[in-house]
Amino acid sequence: RSSASIASSIPTTRSRDRRTDGRAVTVIEQLAVWAAGLTWGGVPDAVRRRARWQLGAVLASTLDGPDNIAGRALLARAGETGEAPVPGTDRRGTAPGAAGVAAGLATVLDQCDLIPGAAAGPAAVWPAIVLGAAAGADVDDVLTAQVAANEVMGRLGLATFIGPHHAENSVHV
Image (tube, rainbow, N blue to C red):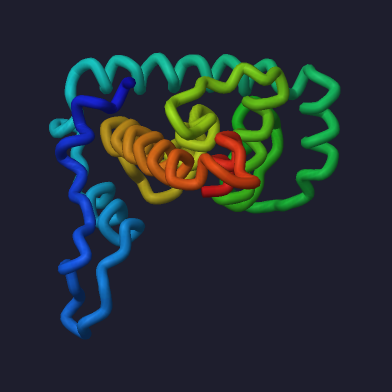
C-alpha cells in the first residue's frame, strides 16, 4: 500500500479524547488535523514517487478525456464560468467546478488508479492542483494535498466499504 509508511503518523481517536466543550473528537476531525499538518518533507520517498506517478497518469487520462464521447458530453454540460482553467480544454470555471470537470475528464477512459478503499486518482489530483493554483500553492504543497487526499479517501472508503457504498464514491469525499 502506497501510504503504509505514513499510516503510523495519523492519530487515532480514542473514546476518551474530548474537546474543551466535552464533546468527543471525531475521526474526521483527527484526519483533518493530520492532513493540515502534513508537509512534503514528512512524506516518505516511496510515497512521493507514487504521488508523482499518480499525477502523471491522471494528467495523461485528462488530456485524452475531451476526445472521448463521454468527455464531450461532460463538457457540453459544464456550463460554469470563472477564472480557473479547465485542464485540457479552452474552458474556464470556478475552481471547484474546474477541478470537478477535470476529474470527470480523467475518468471517462476508466483508467482510475485504485488504493485500498478508494478510486482516488482524479479525486485526489485535480482538487489539489486546481484549488492549490487558486491559493498560490507551490508544487510541494499540491503534492502534499494529493497524498493527504489519497490517505483520507482510502480510510473513509474502507470505513464505509460494507453497505450500499462503492470505493468509487471517494470522488465525493
